[in-house]
Image (cartoon, rainbow, N blue to C red; front, side, top):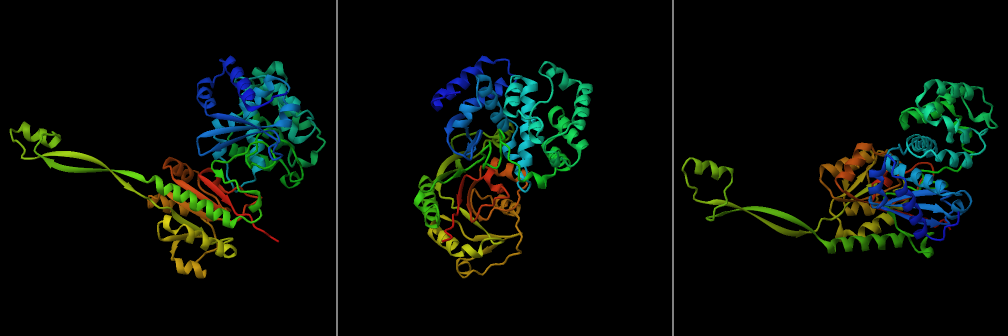
Length: 450
């Protein structure tokens, strides 16, 4: 399908969407669609389509230009991909997975569940797109990701367990070109049935996936997904915060640039000044009858003074609290960390905190000399709990990003509208850093190895 620009893309999706008023999610979608923008990209990291969330508010859906031209043939195809990406938002997939678990397994599971949900509930035309997109059903992953049942039996197969059992038996007898990927054929068949037809959670399906598939042999397999939560290679490009774009000249070694950008952000933040509303009680002769005064008047006692509540605005500046991870790359980047903190010391609130498996304090001189206490572990939950207990509104976390954060702490940080600035000393290829989902801005240290 030839689409010239983003405006045309948005117009097609909006018109097609509002023609389909039978969609059971119309009310949710009508609100969601107003907060979605569209981008056509040539970025090779986004091979299909992708959804990106900025500052926790506006969503962008990216479409790869070649994907639009070669794989999207009809408006039905385009609309199905749109529904697929928006379901990642509606289902909460962007904040649900465990970052210490392999992304790819979850991506496959999320895609199956979303494809099933769309086809079953309101857009059966997605059946045709998936069978075009994953044509070779003799390949294990293609088989998992596409509907392997008859189009004219769609409604029946979702509701009829006897039909599901027939599919189960069929799968157990099938031979695949890449049969070596299957660890247990029975569990593989059960995985398909539960992912497509049952309301099994993504977490439970993850463990079933590992029981059914030889995950070690899967590492060399490449498949294009409609949604990938790693943001590299396929599909769904998930970023809650903003990664600061840096000039090409400094991409190899951007230490100085990061320091300048963070300082500028903090300067602008201070200029805005947070205004606290202060409530005071003053005693006046002018009546302002409260519960106490009503009771006294009822007893025929006339108060000498009446309370008068006054509200005033008190401009204050709330500095940023710094947490430094001393469990990983700290020793290699001590000079950078020291320079960063020195440059923003007018905008931070002391003391400076360091953490490994617990949070403690460090003074500026100790930091300069590299004298720190560490247990060599990492506990990000300790950082957030410490910030919650102290009612910190803004924190800067300097870390290598490898660790986990409990879901309830992520949700709590979002509810409290905590501003989290993240400096990644290095970015892991294996693990998604859990701060991604809740960080307002992210800075990645690019090191010059020359």
